[in-house]
Image 1 (cartoon, rainbow, N blue to C red):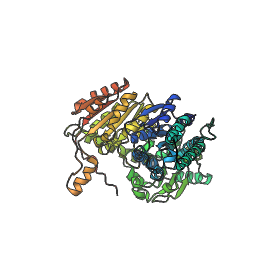
Image 2 (image 1 turned 180 degrees about the vertical axis):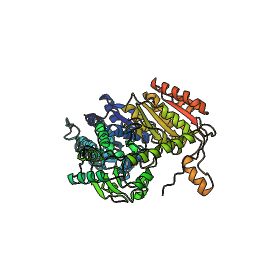
Image 3 (image 1 turned 90 degrees about the vertical axis):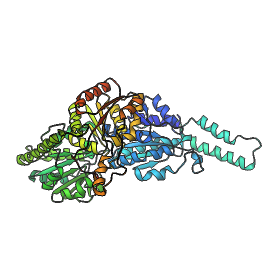
Image 4 (image 1 turned 135 degrees about the vertical axis):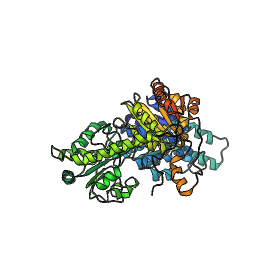
Length: 576
């Protein structure tokens, strides 16, 4: 087995259905051998999108996604996506090609110190130095990616560890097989032969182990009892559930049942959006800051007190139960009154069982929060009906929400338009919303949508693009078309970086660097092999969305380029 086949066998053993990549000579055996073993290989137009796609697949399945990139620029192009996965605590394995083991640091093509570059951004980075170490390194990578706080890992595999031994030996022989060798050349030949012996000795029939799953870290019994008593005594409790509670897709029904049994009003963020479906009486969507500031108990499940909770000021007057797998996140800015270093899913299920059979009735508190939600919805309806140049973006988002099937996944990639959509577009069930997470990375859209559609091919995958964000990955429509990945993209095209402009113009008085054009994004999609639709008026929305869904369900990726106007629905982007 060459190195490429060993990599493929480990991927197969770990249940990896798709390998995302951008081809390169350093990694060709990985791609070829993976395909031979039934792993689908999807080649993207940019390495960063390959990693975003792997990230998406990991979030939706719980199995680490895998991307393979070539040496040098291939690895450097992936850094943004790797950092995004690290901050989002998403498990993935990045395979990086590299120059031959004997040529490191000698000026070989695309040879840089990749380990020094990437180590700060991953949980673990490994570099096998001979063929027999390739399988153990990969198996460790999969284990580390999932254990504890999930995150990305990196394995660098040199080109002479991936190709057939006979091929590698022929490469080296061509360099050393000379006539009338001088003494130094004889010494060099002997050194190379010794190095080849080191590379390939003891490499027959490697044992491929089945995946090892760590038991989720459970809270202590006294922590459960303390939390249960606090919940039972609270009059105005609030629970905020974040992505870290969603690490076990196969047990999502258990999580929903636990949340319902606890009976506390819930705000959902990140991957937890959609956990309770739509219209659930415990699920609150608006005015979270006000609710937290009024609460007497705040349960933060997988949610740190970072900028999203104003560095803890939202819960400064509440008794806080914090649950997190990361000690740093658990104690960030506002140390919880009850800190639980544990898996949030496990915590919620255990607490739900420790509560009395009849959950506390907080009718007035729930009614107050529910009324605020309804008032905000009415306000959104009023603003959606206002006339603006081109299409009112709130009206467009309302129409998108009405067009979602129960089997839809929504991917958000943008600033102003996507932030608006997050108030209006409601995911229908768990694992149906994807956004970059705390890093706020633009450009995740095509990769996330790609991974989502491959995980759930029967779902309608909606990619909501801001027009600025669309520029990062719209060329992946070529990938969608070539590989038969029919996503539905909607570009909210207001010809600008509007989220930035809102603050910049108000504070500095100019829109320098914030203006774009009403670019014909639909024609770009058409040029890549997809279907393009342009709409300029509100009366065209319903029919255009219906046509987009129809095209996608028939197998064509489609992009709807919607020219939208400006509103005063939301403020700017500066986070302090």
